[in-house]
Image (cartoon, rainbow, N blue to C red; front, side):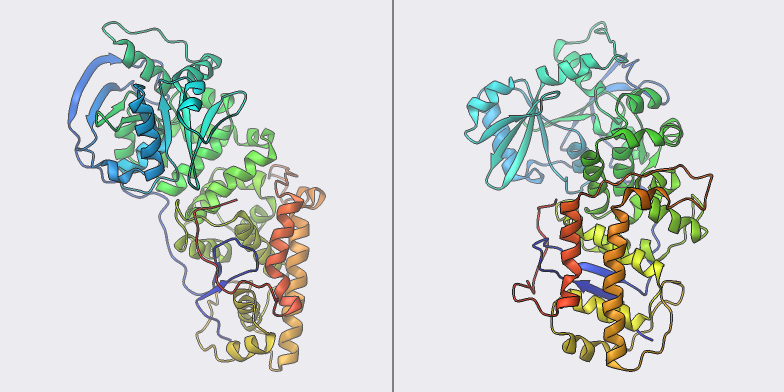
Length: 491
């Protein structure tokens, strides 16, 4: 039987992103891609080193680099962020862009968001901006509301308190080091990875690199700022952030960092479920889902986070460094083509893909059934319209996927029955994915696999996922939204 290469689902939920299924071509991606960075002009290259600031290898020399030579212009900064930067600067405060946004600007990528660091106290930031609030008790920051955008602003004083909690980093001011350099350096030492430890002054047009982050960008490496074991013990969420960054940028992990990701993988189960969902959403909803899933599998994290999907990988004979694909990876590969860091999807979409795929694993279907089901969810039209469309499909399906089998379904009544049955299986798969007991037994046939009963999908979120498929059972919904597109919102 034949199915279309890409079937795009649309739902009555305002998730602003198509639900897609690719059942033909398998795109082959490398988990490592070369990153080209133009040679930079070193304005100052000091000789004293950050002896406590390098987790792998020798300590780097401190550098101050021209942002123009790095290809960064102020036009690359989002307008709401520029408004906040200008507002703080006009009041006489120092302002910097910090974290992943500087890395992305150097790589000529669109940052997911922009983080600002300032010499102003958070209470002073509140006075400058009318729509502003302080959030977070342990590590407080300001949320400045500009139109529909939230710009995060942190203070040197607040991050200094965070730095003092870090018992590993006990540093002293090096000789011949200015107070300004020392303050900036200390702030960078509190970062997770060297490529996130860059600071950019958009007014002086200088990028500060105290940790060798630019060299790691050149080498396409994710490396902890402090020794990896200490870094991940201090905050095990860094393991998931590292996977997210490596997946999105197609970077490799430094040897020590990779070793302790594997060694301390089980520690992520201690994270709050809301935090795990947040990190998983960053991995799967922003255009790098396939690469992230491959890394989660490679480092033994998939068994902890998604035991059901890990069982599927094992049953497919997937090795940790396998370059082959499967149907699950193909679905997410096609989703990635439609997303970007500034154009994510709702979290219910990728959970729906997981449930849909599990339903096909539990009971393989004829490609005609999959095509009809997909079209029904896509357009929300009457089932008679769906049947008229699906019978005209002539493109052959990918025969490599065991989830697809030929059943020789000839009558429309039989096809409708199979569609309803598939809807039932999808609903059952979703329930199993949110059942701790079922999840805990997902890997029972593989005694060497770690045991996990982790369920981070809330009941409310599962109901949103269930609503995506409801139209197949109820036919055309009167409130069905026939056109949903991308947006900057996410979950």
